Length: 315
Ligand code: 173
Figure 1 (cartoon, protein in one colour):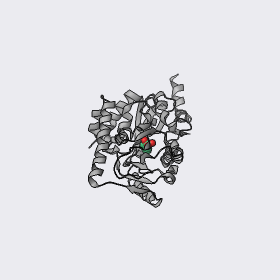
Figure 2 (cartoon, rainbow, N blue to C red):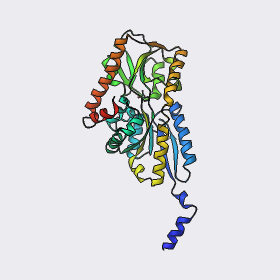
Figure 3 (cartoon, rainbow, N blue to C red):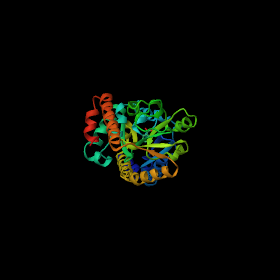
Figure 4 (cartoon, rainbow, N blue to C red):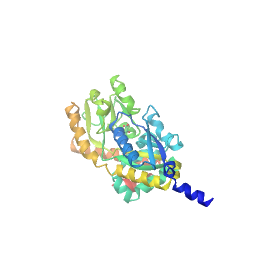
């Protein structure tokens, strides 16, 4: 018996039989640059991971709707999700708190933030947070009506949980939609504006329907790779180590966004998007208010973890 087992271990096909394939879905539309970048990363994983780990890209919101991706990862309908936390507050309110990060992902790996995130994601979402793939990216308010002070009275603004309380504090009427529905809403005049990062407007052609960007930006966009915890724990150690290493390497590319975002602002100007900004004191108050409202809401939504997250995310 022992000898047979020994021989089986030596069979050339044995390693192959251990290869794991993970199914990944994106909460962002497939034509977004984020997703293309992730597909490139998957290509590298698959090239290097032969015999160990492969990732199968299933698709974007047509496969699983944007706001259902978190649930699909939690339940194991899919293994890995590419999403921002705001899209899975239906799993846990903590997901949207990552937008309040002032410390970087690299700092959070060192200051206990990454471990705390993983404690919460495991406990409340049955998830492993593999890596943050977007950061150093402010959100902005984009509008089609001119304003001379931060007052959105009479305006209907597309949101996700990221922006809700902040825009409401400026009297906006808000409407939640997935990114894939914004273009049509703008085209039909259903909305007068939207919240969105400094980048990735062009991916979805929103520049065609956008007149103004309000500066300054606020918060810090987070997009990450989340994985079903049971699946993660069940990976053969070699596959898990490989996945952790590749996910970390992806996260370590985040400085990329700094120059990319500068260029995106330039592209917006070239496309005719005008900047609306206020006096220095109003701008300062605008950013401070966003932060204050963000944390107040985070702590209200998560009395259990809000304060702990603030210690590692805020500066
Ligand atoms: O506006 C959004 O859809 C949103 O919440 C978001 C978050 C991170 C990156 C891009 C968009």
